[in-house]
Length: 341
Image 1 (cartoon, rainbow, N blue to C red):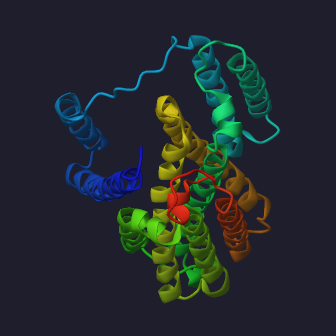
Image 2 (cartoon, rainbow, N blue to C red):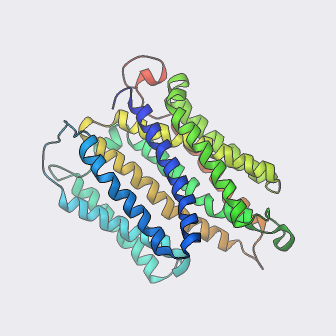
Image 3 (cartoon, rainbow, N blue to C red):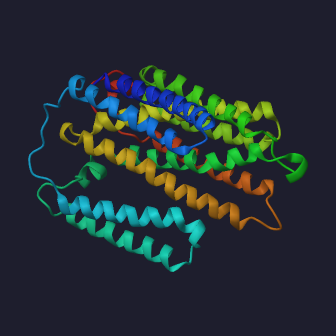
């Protein structure tokens, strides 16, 4: 976790982004070649299986061990609570927000998560040491991760639908075909890869807090471009690149910030909470923005639905940019000294 954590996390994020992009392109080619989804789904199975020998022979075992046993009760409560809550949020647009399944799922899930908090504060070896979240400096980066995931996952569908809409028929959009819409993914992915691999250098140059602030403002700027000139293909594609640059910085720096402030025996849990926060943000944001777009329909789709999503996402980016200024960092991340602030 020390000085090399930022570079390692950036390399991991960049590699994962490249893999995701190649996987998406490869899946499309395989599906087009065979016309059957099953061969496409077997490919990731084979790739994951090929990773197992590498994990066994090349990944070093950690020498840090936390005392205590496994918190089975806490793990069960957390898993069930998240499953019920996020499942209800994800299905709310189809079920309806007032449907008994939605209300009972969210309500029961929240009750179980509250019970989980009480359990974690009382067991000897908790699954998650909540003091790390509230006092250890991990809580703010996790909130930033949640907000960053919300704007990223929440805007993707709306942005793609806008690009595919035909202005001659719908009165808005760019008229992209599904094939040309892939250009958006390529440009966004390219920007993400570029800053994911260089994020640690940026953080060393201007500081961790400033880097998070810049990442948020970059993505907010991209949404501003969409709000002002969404009918321009050039501006739209420029916004895709800027979005990738900002999100790449965020993806490379926030996990590194969490790793650096988390206790040595809680790095795994903190990293797991980071991924959980992003996944939860995706489920909640997807349902929320589907509700926003549906509630604004009056006689058919309009550009207002898309601008509402972009405006909300821009506000979310400004919020996590400001939160970035309050992230606890080692002074060496900000001004060269080796203590935390």
